[in-house]
Figure 1 (cartoon, rainbow, N blue to C red):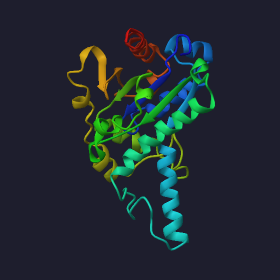
Figure 2: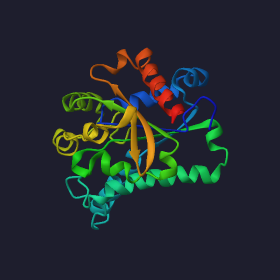
Figure 3: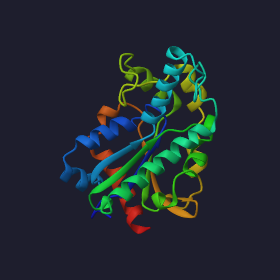
Figure 4: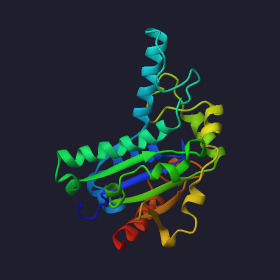
Length: 240
């Protein structure tokens, strides 16, 4: 473990809830301040969006340029097989294990930040967290960024740049796809009744906090509210 820092931070929430903006802010925060205020070492971000987007690009090439069947998605951009959502989570665990394999001192100076969204259409957080490796969960704390579906829809529309659909900060979903995939969010049921801010996942006790982010992220991302959330998680993390 890096002194005073999380080994693994899992950041989840609806699309456009502010996760990517939080990561961007934390990445740009000076290292000493980031460790002091947010308990984060050097950040290694593991995000399933680039993996997912690569599948979209491959399917477009196969269908439009090579005249071959799509592998992952249908013509409307929905996954052909629901288990592909679980494959993405398994890939995140695999990428984490590669880091540990290649650097025995990985966590001496690095916090792995794992980011994803899940909705009821594809099993929600109950299903997604069941595909994260036990050794990863044993080192993890979780921040859920809470916004309503309406806020997710508003921010999703606002950030979209049609010239950069593959961009972490500027990608977006069509309204109908956001509605189908992410209107239903099971975080409340997933975390309800959990004891004192801990999830029990595959027999591993994982601390979590909720960051309410309704409204303009710009007003709070650099202020004390975000630091307070990480402080609360740190107390739980170090008491585990």
